[in-house]
Amino acid sequence: MQKILVVDDAEVNRELLRNILRNDYVVEMAEDGEKALQILRGGCPNLAALLLDLHMPRVDGFAVITEMKDKGWINRVPVLIISSEHAVETENKCLQMGVSDFIHKPFEASVVRNRVKNAIELFNYKRQLEQKVEEQAETLKKQSLIIQMQAERLSKAKPFNKLMMEYRSVIMEVETKLKVLNAVFSEEYKRNPFESIKSRLKTPDSIYKKLEKKGYSFTIENIQDYITDVAGVRVICSFPDDIYRLADLLTKQDDVILLKKKDYIREPKHNGYRSLHLILSVPIFLADEKKYVKVEVQFRTIAMDFWASLEHKLKYKKDIDNTDEIERQLKACADSIEELDYQMQEIRDRIDIPGD
Image 1 (spheres, rainbow, N blue to C red):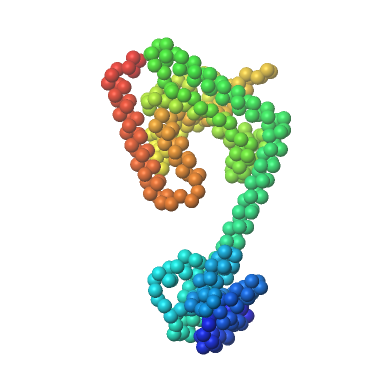
Image 2 (image 1 turned 135 degrees about the vertical axis):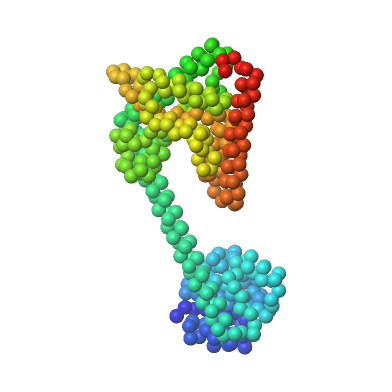
């Protein structure tokens, strides 16, 4: 049977509790906090619960709880306070220190048995959950290490490096096309269709994780066939209509193939995200061949990009309270940003900027 330690300076209370619990547990007793701490310091690996009086001479119950908390024992053994008090301040103090429950005097046998049983079961359930979380965390850590090792090994392979060079090249090709269009607008219409260009190349471990999520092995062929955003270019425009004008001019070029289009501006995501996504196949010119390579091009206004950057940071930030409220506020901000973008565009049209 499981072992329970009853600590009370009144012998009558110890005997009463022993008689109530003796059929279900092995009951060990201590007459004060000092004796209890001696037993706890000895290890007590089979101790299922501690029933503890608060008011005892020399070493009281609060001192026992304090040492249990300092040593981490309170995370291994549920503590139930034996008390005739019902003071809210005392109970709150005990609960804040990690106490599981209270057994009030005079003792009612059925209540005592049920409180002890429930405290032990809940504590064991909590420990099982914590153990599962630890095991899952360890598994994820091992998986992450495996991914890093696989990604690092592949990143050193010549075929992978050649592929990454091709993706870097297609980014440069798209950037050049966009800069040419920008120069044309600047010359003909005396204004620029975009504010800035940002580019990025997926890391090996990010590629590995995405392939694994899709259910494909980590090979050069699968990267080329099943991942469309290894190379990414983001174009930040001033106004929404510039986005569509620039995207249309880019996709109409005779060497650019539009593979896929997702318009999250006209049909935003449920959280308010807005952007125009194009998956393109664009030729790069190598030493001995012309080769088409996939690239993702995203178009956003300055306001859309600011919102997306903030939402991304919050999305991957841990231990945030009131996530539902934050998501509601972000959605409201996204709607306000859309209204602002079109208001600014209307003002631009009213002052008749050349070329519009």
